[in-house]
Length: 154
Length: 154
Length: 154
Length: 154
Image (spheres, rainbow over the protein chains, first blue to last red):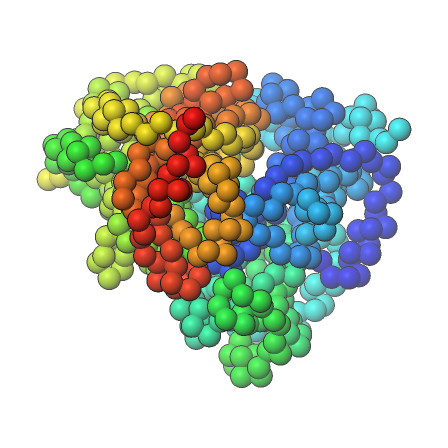
């Protein structure tokens, strides 16, 4: 994402969101021969952070499964600001950047234990439901106002 | 990446690039409980495709190692257009979207065997060199004109 | 697997199996800061090789899904013989080591392009079926003689 | 690993080891279309658990890097006892099963939050040192008695 679109993204964060927090650590196998984190690892973390964020407001993985809910991706992006090394402890801080009708955008910031921001990313997802569980057709659904309210900062 | 920035990206593809081709296949372990590809897999593919693209113009992994060359990421993004299933055979088509002084942008298109575009992504990378091999400090370098020429379509 | 159990495994290879072949290549992101393959990569390859082996005798991923077939793991092991580097092209050679009633063992050999064996591994799996597709209960089933025959060397 | 070799492994656990504890959680992307953990994930965890175990006795990743220490794998195995689902919180419990001259075996047990053992695995590794950091030749070394003592239960 270039500077212009980063500005755009910033402006789009109009939803007054709570912040989810997901703890993670860079493992040996998450790093590449340059000795730093292999970048798809950040996307694995962002995905896990979004699931943890949902869980924090009452939508656990178990409930998502039981209610056939899904949140497939539309797009994802990440800026890599500082390199991460094996054993670095980090936190992914997630906010709802925007709620659309059937889609929503999550902004993630990956912050190292010492407060340094390593990366900033975003995911745009659809709120959807499987007709009859995983593997069956999935359709986007209007995000209920009750769900949106769960993410609103008091 | 939103529509505006996608337009911006499109406009930035001013370099007349050759196209690299990287074959891949969706494996069981690349898919998630929804039965479709887990999205960080696309970024793993894009990274591998960029290395293959470099190899195709004479910069093999072996040469990169020997010359202490590196190409760390500045940013990466992907739009997910159609879902991929286990066993789908795909090709990542890569072009140089833009050459800067010490950085370059690669545009990737992931196309399924039947011609359907599954995803479109991009990576911005720095062209750099380790002081003394992996693990030692890395500095960006001006991309030599000879390197740029290797990617120019005839 | 120690020497004694390796001997045991060897002796168990009494089924006259055809050999499946799965091509793969070590990617940048498959390697760790030591500059060699991160060992779980071999298990990812072995899993993919088993699916490709099944496909080669008529049990494609699509058919497996349609018939609710599954092949969950009982155990897996691997001996690492020589290190693999980024860009190494390899082949996983797979054979049925043993057919039990509802289980089967696959022996894998990972061979580099130049003929050097990098690793030898094995998987023991159950042949099973989901009651009603993924996510529903799975039960082991007697492996049909017709299935066993597909893997028998002529 | 079959029953016989599991027995053998058990008998080999003659070193009176302390127990390392590594916390982990099954993520969406760690699961496959069957809705359960993709088995190479256990090996990723076992590797991370061994690094954490080393860290717990004073050999942090940073120290390992600084002293050019390495612990490449000879073999790895795992028995899968009960399936793990997304969001399951687990602990990898690691012990030194055996110290050889220049090699050592780590026994891992993966236990779910509710006390159920999901998997039991093992790794055999060499204790070694890079001539001059990652990427340079690595040689096995006699494991110092002082290192062995760090893992001995009081």
